[in-house]
Image (cartoon, rainbow, N blue to C red; front, side, top):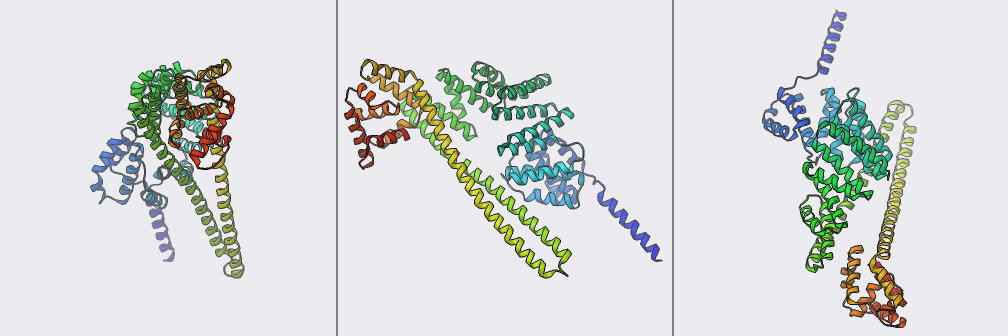
Length: 527
């Protein structure tokens, strides 16, 4: 009798086990929506929205699959994920009881969600879980996503390795579009690492694939990358040719990126009238960086055309956008650092908890006192480690910020001084000094144009300091050109002592304090 009961229980258990792991049967309309997400995500979203009411009474497996498809369709349509509540519920479901064939996909979209939420460590964790879950038919997009996370953290060699893996798997799958995007990412990484020859090689491979596939949009995308590379290498005519051939087929995002390269080349060639309408079109972009570049270009054109009213308007727009972009960039950087720090704390706390549980299961009865002492020691140790890590992180961040700001200022100063020294205006000033000829009104205008070009903020900031006489104003312009007091005295027909007196007087007029001529020079060079 007992044996018979055991046999029945064994058979029942095996049946339940097979039933639990059998793949659910999903409605055909959900399978159709799944296919649509890959080719027409907007249509997939529309179809899924129409099924929302029916899903309220559907079986649990279908409801969960429906929720996963909603996240997938939004992701494919480039709709930013703003919350992780739904994907966390889906991950828990597929880990515990759902269709295991969908677990890797759930992990993938968890990673995509946390990428949008600027939680790079958690995103990387889920992408790696997705890779481990896939035993075959590995999704190449996983490697591309991991590569982008490494790239964002400036880990370029690791990013390049991931992009190469994505290209390998896309090649195996004969996914031409995927291969083109992978080659683009590989080329861009080489470009950032200052390897233009390698970048050009991979872009040429991408161009061959795009041409063979007759995909005009992909050809446009590759041409845009080639144009950016050509522009950086100084081959502006080739860059213009590539952009002009790619623009008709570019989507909105790529179009503005191409226009940014295009108009700056035109401006460099002195074709301000041709560049201006494109700059005006770029002000309508949703990208703050594109708008910033647009108003910077319009400011430069207004300065070239001596349109003071337009110059002030464009410059004010440029300054406001620049401030906004810096605030956003700073906020995103802090969010990324906080996410990284919080994730590390979360992982440490989980590790500590697992260790404590293991210790409790093995020695809680016979070594209770020892367990309590060990727990206190571990807690104190990890708390100390967390404190040290936080202090070290803050110190490194502070040093990095100081270093980057210093490098940026030095680089800008060197670039400005070099442009001034190499300019025709500077050569003319030195010639006037050598021949003993005085400065003319036309020379002042040329100096102002030069300074507006190399240091756009200088003249507006100088005028904000206070009113100056024409002579004082001329001395300030010549100081900005790094001319010596003797050279300045020669140009404005004064002796050296007069120049020193003017500089000392300007410092007291602006600051209200006594100072040396060198103190005023420092103010001029700091603007």
